[in-house]
Picture (cartoon, rainbow, N blue to C red):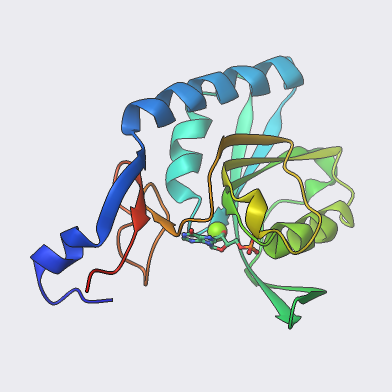
Length: 184
Ligand code: IMP
Ligand code: MG
Protein backbone atom coordinates (compact mmCIF):
# COMPACT_ATOMS: atom_id res chain seq x y z
CA UNK A 1 0.00 0.00 0.00
CA UNK A 2 1.31 3.40 -0.97
CA UNK A 3 0.70 6.17 1.52
CA UNK A 4 3.53 8.33 0.28
CA UNK A 5 1.13 10.68 -1.40
CA UNK A 6 -2.32 11.77 -0.35
CA UNK A 7 -3.45 11.37 -3.97
CA UNK A 8 -2.69 7.63 -4.08
CA UNK A 9 -4.04 7.20 -0.53
CA UNK A 10 -7.36 8.65 -1.68
CA UNK A 11 -7.37 6.89 -5.06
CA UNK A 12 -7.24 3.49 -3.37
CA UNK A 13 -10.67 4.22 -1.90
CA UNK A 14 -12.24 2.71 -5.00
CA UNK A 15 -15.95 3.17 -4.36
CA UNK A 16 -18.30 3.74 -1.45
CA UNK A 17 -20.39 0.62 -0.83
CA UNK A 18 -22.33 1.69 2.28
CA UNK A 19 -22.91 5.33 3.15
CA UNK A 20 -22.86 6.94 6.60
CA UNK A 21 -26.61 7.40 6.37
CA UNK A 22 -27.22 3.72 5.54
CA UNK A 23 -25.02 2.63 8.45
CA UNK A 24 -26.86 4.98 10.81
CA UNK A 25 -30.28 3.63 9.77
CA UNK A 26 -29.17 -0.01 10.09
CA UNK A 27 -27.69 0.59 13.55
CA UNK A 28 -30.87 2.28 14.80
CA UNK A 29 -32.82 -0.83 13.70
CA UNK A 30 -30.25 -3.19 15.27
CA UNK A 31 -30.39 -1.26 18.55
CA UNK A 32 -34.15 -1.58 18.56
CA UNK A 33 -33.93 -5.32 17.87
CA UNK A 34 -31.50 -5.75 20.79
CA UNK A 35 -33.82 -3.77 23.09
CA UNK A 36 -36.73 -6.02 22.05
CA UNK A 37 -34.77 -9.26 22.52
CA UNK A 38 -33.40 -8.42 25.99
CA UNK A 39 -36.52 -6.55 27.12
CA UNK A 40 -34.94 -4.64 30.03
CA UNK A 41 -32.43 -7.33 31.01
CA UNK A 42 -28.86 -6.07 31.36
CA UNK A 43 -26.35 -7.05 28.67
CA UNK A 44 -22.61 -7.05 28.13
CA UNK A 45 -21.52 -5.84 24.68
CA UNK A 46 -18.16 -7.37 23.80
CA UNK A 47 -16.25 -5.76 20.98
CA UNK A 48 -13.46 -7.59 19.17
CA UNK A 49 -10.61 -5.12 18.65
CA UNK A 50 -9.58 -3.35 16.68
CA UNK A 51 -11.99 -3.46 13.75
CA UNK A 52 -15.24 -3.28 15.71
CA UNK A 53 -14.46 -0.20 17.79
CA UNK A 54 -16.43 2.29 15.66
CA UNK A 55 -19.44 -0.04 15.31
CA UNK A 56 -19.37 -0.63 19.09
CA UNK A 57 -19.36 3.12 19.80
CA UNK A 58 -22.45 3.69 17.67
CA UNK A 59 -24.30 0.47 18.53
CA UNK A 60 -24.00 0.98 22.30
CA UNK A 61 -25.65 4.38 21.90
CA UNK A 62 -28.58 2.80 20.03
CA UNK A 63 -29.23 0.41 22.93
CA UNK A 64 -31.48 1.41 25.82
CA UNK A 65 -31.37 -1.76 27.96
CA UNK A 66 -28.83 -1.55 30.83
CA UNK A 67 -25.54 -2.17 29.13
CA UNK A 68 -21.91 -2.73 30.05
CA UNK A 69 -19.13 -2.82 27.52
CA UNK A 70 -16.05 -5.01 27.28
CA UNK A 71 -13.20 -5.44 24.85
CA UNK A 72 -11.07 -8.33 23.75
CA UNK A 73 -8.40 -8.85 21.17
CA UNK A 74 -8.31 -12.24 19.46
CA UNK A 75 -6.28 -13.95 16.76
CA UNK A 76 -7.07 -17.32 15.24
CA UNK A 77 -4.43 -19.80 14.24
CA UNK A 78 -4.96 -22.48 11.66
CA UNK A 79 -3.08 -24.60 9.17
CA UNK A 80 -4.27 -24.51 5.56
CA UNK A 81 -8.01 -24.19 5.55
CA UNK A 82 -8.56 -26.00 8.84
CA UNK A 83 -9.08 -23.97 11.98
CA UNK A 84 -7.16 -25.38 14.90
CA UNK A 85 -9.86 -24.03 17.17
CA UNK A 86 -7.02 -22.36 19.01
CA UNK A 87 -7.77 -18.72 19.36
CA UNK A 88 -5.08 -16.61 20.92
CA UNK A 89 -6.43 -13.92 23.18
CA UNK A 90 -3.96 -11.06 23.14
CA UNK A 91 -6.22 -9.02 25.41
CA UNK A 92 -8.94 -10.69 27.45
CA UNK A 93 -12.23 -9.47 28.90
CA UNK A 94 -12.05 -8.27 32.48
CA UNK A 95 -15.59 -9.43 33.30
CA UNK A 96 -16.54 -12.85 34.66
CA UNK A 97 -19.23 -13.56 32.05
CA UNK A 98 -21.22 -16.13 34.07
CA UNK A 99 -23.43 -13.25 35.22
CA UNK A 100 -24.05 -11.77 31.78
CA UNK A 101 -26.14 -11.95 28.66
CA UNK A 102 -23.26 -11.46 26.24
CA UNK A 103 -23.52 -9.87 22.80
CA UNK A 104 -20.36 -10.10 20.69
CA UNK A 105 -19.99 -7.05 18.45
CA UNK A 106 -17.87 -7.75 15.35
CA UNK A 107 -16.96 -5.69 12.30
CA UNK A 108 -16.96 -8.39 9.62
CA UNK A 109 -17.26 -12.14 9.25
CA UNK A 110 -15.05 -13.37 6.46
CA UNK A 111 -13.80 -16.97 6.71
CA UNK A 112 -15.62 -17.28 10.04
CA UNK A 113 -12.56 -18.64 11.84
CA UNK A 114 -12.10 -15.88 14.39
CA UNK A 115 -15.67 -15.76 15.63
CA UNK A 116 -16.07 -19.51 15.52
CA UNK A 117 -13.16 -19.78 17.94
CA UNK A 118 -14.17 -16.80 20.10
CA UNK A 119 -17.72 -18.13 20.47
CA UNK A 120 -16.41 -21.57 21.48
CA UNK A 121 -14.13 -19.96 24.04
CA UNK A 122 -16.78 -17.67 25.55
CA UNK A 123 -19.44 -20.42 25.62
CA UNK A 124 -17.03 -22.54 27.66
CA UNK A 125 -17.09 -19.76 30.27
CA UNK A 126 -20.87 -20.27 30.75
CA UNK A 127 -22.48 -16.90 30.10
CA UNK A 128 -26.25 -16.58 30.77
CA UNK A 129 -26.62 -16.36 26.99
CA UNK A 130 -24.49 -15.50 23.97
CA UNK A 131 -25.36 -13.82 20.67
CA UNK A 132 -23.30 -12.40 17.83
CA UNK A 133 -23.98 -9.22 15.90
CA UNK A 134 -21.81 -8.25 12.95
CA UNK A 135 -21.84 -5.09 10.87
CA UNK A 136 -20.76 -6.90 7.69
CA UNK A 137 -21.00 -10.45 6.44
CA UNK A 138 -19.09 -11.94 3.48
CA UNK A 139 -20.76 -15.39 3.31
CA UNK A 140 -19.09 -16.29 0.00
CA UNK A 141 -15.70 -16.42 1.79
CA UNK A 142 -16.69 -18.80 4.58
CA UNK A 143 -14.42 -21.79 5.32
CA UNK A 144 -16.00 -22.74 8.64
CA UNK A 145 -19.73 -23.02 9.15
CA UNK A 146 -20.53 -19.92 11.16
CA UNK A 147 -23.61 -17.72 11.20
CA UNK A 148 -24.16 -14.52 13.17
CA UNK A 149 -27.47 -13.97 14.98
CA UNK A 150 -27.67 -10.55 13.33
CA UNK A 151 -25.79 -9.21 10.28
CA UNK A 152 -26.50 -5.61 9.24
CA UNK A 153 -25.12 -5.83 5.69
CA UNK A 154 -24.23 -8.76 3.45
CA UNK A 155 -21.52 -7.86 0.95
CA UNK A 156 -19.82 -9.57 -2.01
CA UNK A 157 -16.19 -10.66 -1.88
CA UNK A 158 -14.66 -7.19 -1.81
CA UNK A 159 -11.85 -6.07 0.47
CA UNK A 160 -13.48 -3.26 2.39
CA UNK A 161 -12.19 -0.37 4.48
CA UNK A 162 -13.63 2.33 6.70
CA UNK A 163 -15.87 2.57 9.74
CA UNK A 164 -13.26 0.70 11.81
CA UNK A 165 -11.98 -1.64 9.08
CA UNK A 166 -8.43 -1.18 7.90
CA UNK A 167 -5.96 -1.92 5.19
CA UNK A 168 -2.49 -2.01 6.73
CA UNK A 169 -3.91 -0.07 9.72
CA UNK A 170 -5.03 2.84 7.54
CA UNK A 171 -8.55 4.02 6.60
CA UNK A 172 -10.25 2.97 9.90
CA UNK A 173 -11.41 6.57 10.34
CA UNK A 174 -13.44 6.79 7.12
CA UNK A 175 -17.08 7.39 8.11
CA UNK A 176 -18.40 5.00 5.39
CA UNK A 177 -17.59 1.50 4.08
CA UNK A 178 -15.66 1.49 0.81
CA UNK A 179 -14.02 -1.02 -1.48
CA UNK A 180 -10.23 -0.88 -1.30
CA UNK A 181 -8.43 -1.30 -4.60
CA UNK A 182 -4.79 -0.53 -5.14
CA UNK A 183 -4.40 1.66 -8.21
CA UNK A 184 -1.76 0.92 -10.85
P1 IMP B 1 -12.30 -14.28 9.73
O1 IMP B 1 -11.72 -15.04 10.88
O2 IMP B 1 -11.73 -14.69 8.41
O3 IMP B 1 -13.81 -14.25 9.70
O4 IMP B 1 -11.70 -12.86 9.88
C1 IMP B 1 -12.32 -11.80 10.33
C2 IMP B 1 -11.35 -10.68 10.51
O5 IMP B 1 -10.53 -10.42 9.32
C3 IMP B 1 -12.18 -9.44 10.69
O6 IMP B 1 -12.48 -9.24 12.05
C4 IMP B 1 -11.32 -8.36 10.07
O7 IMP B 1 -10.45 -7.84 11.07
C5 IMP B 1 -10.52 -9.06 9.00
N1 IMP B 1 -11.13 -8.84 7.66
C6 IMP B 1 -11.81 -9.74 6.92
N2 IMP B 1 -12.24 -9.20 5.76
C7 IMP B 1 -11.84 -7.91 5.77
C8 IMP B 1 -12.01 -6.82 4.85
O8 IMP B 1 -12.62 -6.90 3.76
N3 IMP B 1 -11.46 -5.63 5.22
C9 IMP B 1 -10.78 -5.48 6.39
N4 IMP B 1 -10.62 -6.46 7.29
C10 IMP B 1 -11.14 -7.67 6.98
MG1 MG C 1 -12.05 -7.82 13.46
